[in-house]
Length: 97
Image 1 (cartoon, rainbow, N blue to C red):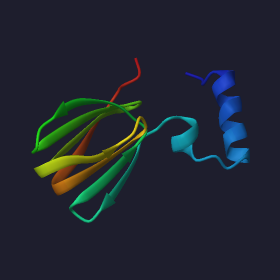
Image 2 (cartoon, rainbow, N blue to C red):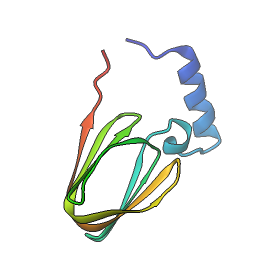
Image 3 (cartoon, one colour):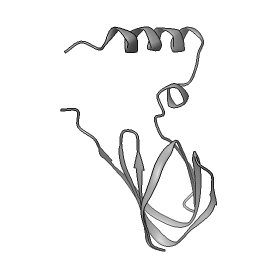
Image 4 (cartoon, one colour):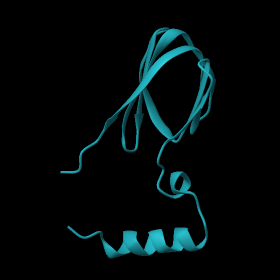
């Protein structure tokens, strides 16, 4: 199946202007610092929050963060900083129908 022309044209413009994909397509960007800090950019909503488990919705799927003493340290409408002892991170992608 082919991409719509509008999307192809938008991707060409973004590449020409060197706009990062996470900015132009609202794709999440995850930055992990050691085992104790994670920054998620472009998340949509917090689906579940416990001190051992955080579940986030993003444009392309669900992001699960497991650990101990997890804390939402800083939060804006686009960015989320989580601190604590991070055990694992997994991603559930959304399948296109």
